[in-house]
Each structure stands twice: as C-alpha cells, then as structure tokens.
Length: 284
Image (cartoon, rainbow, N blue to C red; front, side):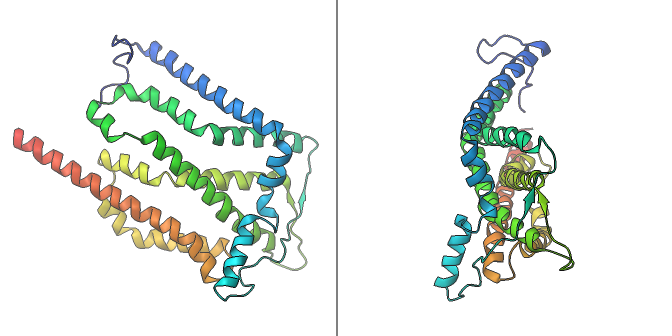
C-alpha cells in the first residue's frame, strides 16, 4: 500500500504534521500560479494575435482545418463536399466591459495551457512522497504522458471539434425568420469549454489506469458498455460534423481509439492485480 502523504518530509525524512503539509501545498500552488501568471502576461501582451488568429480562428473560413479538409475532399474525389464556402457567424458585445474582461479570460486560459506541464509537475511533487518505490517505478514518465495527452486533446478539440461545432450552431436554425446572432462572450465560453474539455477527456487512459489499479474499474465492464460508448461517440460526431462520412470518421476514430486503448490498459492492470493477489495468497 502507498504510504500516507502525512508521514514524512521527502527531503529530510522527518515526520511532517498536517500544518506542514498545508504549508508545502501552499507553496506548490503559489509556484503554479506564478507560472500561469507568467504565461498569461505573454498572452496578454500579444492579445491581438491570440484573439484574432487563435480564438477567432474557427470562425474564419481560411482556418487551417477548413483548408486541409477541402484539399482532402478534392484529392479523394469528393469535389467541394468537405469545403466551406462561408461561415454565417455574427458576434455582438452586449455589455460595456465584456471585451475587456474577455482579455483576462483569454490570458488566464492561455497561461494555464502553456504552464500545464509545470503545474502538473508541482502537483506530482506534492503527492510523490506518499508513493512506494514500486509505485514510483510504475508511474515513471507520468508527467510526460499527462502533458502529452492534455496537449493532444487540446489540439483535437481546437482543430476538429471546435470548427465543426461553430459551423453547426452558426448554421442551425428552426426557421428562416430567425437570425443567429451570438454574443462574443458566449462564443468564447464555448470555445474554452470545448478545448479544455477535450484536453481533460484525453486523460481517459490514465484515469482508467488508476481506477483499475485500485480495483474500481475492470476491462470487462468497459467491454460490456463498448457498444453504448460507440453509439454516444457516433451521435456526437453526427451532430457536430457536416453530413458526410469522411468528416464524421475524422471525429469518431480518435475518440473510439481512445476508448479501445483504455480497455487495453484496464485489462493489463487487472491482470497484474490478479497476479499480485495470487502471489499474496501463496505466501499467506
């Protein structure tokens, strides 16, 4: 079993009290906030670029995703089926301070994304002393993998999910008498939620690993509900993508592979847990 996180100081080996751990946690949080603020300052300085080219990118018909999909569409013989002629998106600002406050939101979110590896490293430093040598060996490279999956999810959400979602809601209407006009803050909230949300979703393999490690989740459970998971993925892809098979597959395949990888990870951990339990029974 893992050692209690309130047992000792990793540097001195001395006993640490609850207050000592709160003090250590405070400094980990403080350094993480400094890193986020540093990233936020950089984003704020170049706000014109980050707002005009990054945040508003999916609302621009020249966005790289649209250009690549259009090129692919021509190469596979689909003509302009996957090309975007125009984006009927109109944004307004309804509050005097909304654009000013948006600058801080963009800066903070951008700073957090840039500083994420450091923030997780600080979190890992805090919980690391509570792990045994055996557990530390099995979690080797965790900072790299967590950061890699996070940035992969961020990229997937920004370059695929966000453009399709923006197009879907911009074009969706119940009646030609209704014109879609969204607030710029609503647009930003949706982009941030989608991008950060997919960054979190892509942590699924690691979450499954730890849940399987403590015996909460099994590979058989994930296999049993695989068909339901696939249906949910297909529905999401069908809703946010244009009505063509290629676009739907572009969104569906990565999410489905993520689920299959999670099943493989759970199966491996379940097998290790079973072998460890058998060894303990033999020695008892």
